Amino acid sequence: MSDSGISILIVDDRPENLLVLEGLLEDFNCNIIKAASGNEALGLMLEHEFALVLLDIQMPEMDGFEVAEFMRGSERTRHIPIIFVTAIYKEQKYMFKGYEIGAVDYLFKPIEPIILKSKVSIFLELARQAVLLKEKAAQLEQKLKEVLELQKKNGELLSLSNHDGLTGVPNRRNFDQYIEISFKTGIREKMPLSVIMIDIDYFKAYNDTYGHIKGDDCLIGVAKEIAASVNRPGDFVARYGGEEFVVVLPKTDAEGARKIAEMIRSNVKALHIPHENSKVHPYVTVSLGAASMIPDATHTIEAFISKADQALYEAKQNGRNQVKVYSSK
Image (cartoon, rainbow, N blue to C red; front, side, top):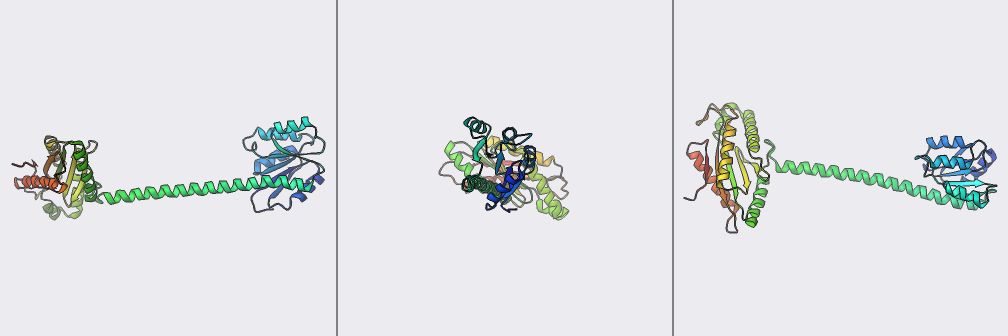
């Protein structure tokens, strides 16, 4: 028994012929399986994968032609190469019949060992190449799975690196990238761009009163509400740092920014997160500063954000829980 995994089926109703064929094939590194009838051969084909079938034509009950027809009618066996072995069916009409039902070649008895080995070696080499191709395909499939898995993990890592670990919204790094892209787009399209800076009112007092775990819960809740309030394509929410958040609103003028800021302020207040030591309201509130401009090459992102910061500072100085829009007056 060979360890190559490649098998040949020899089919003949005469035991002496099977022994002769087996002896001639013993030099090949393959498994030789014998069948003494057509029915036995078809049964073995359901149990094994064969690289080649050496099929005697003249057999009782079911001759080689009938076996070949059955083989070609089955999806499992239709592609197995068949070499007919015969002593009497040498006439052209029989050979044509054999080729029509799927034979790839003929061997005539008495068999010439050199001819047999030459023909068999071709099909064994084809079988070996097929096995190698199958192995290569399996390796490529595995590599593809590994690459896709690596891409997935890289995507997850990228997402983690661009998102705030506590609140789940984009982080400062992500904001810096997004505001730069939005700024350049505003310059190119000559469209307004707005930014809103948001600060949770008296958040240090909240932490001191309720503890840092509750403080984290507060940050998460506020972040989710801000994100839920800003849902147009292109709008962007990020945690700017500590208890500060920032919103980028492409193609939005000052009045549009004011409306969205006021919506955020109202929605956060409506969360009814208790804040007994707030100096402005018994629930958690936010102060918001907005700035808008049509960017051009004379402007800088830093100056733009500074204007929103100034508006936020004014909102906090004027009593908090309110919206201020930057004005140059």
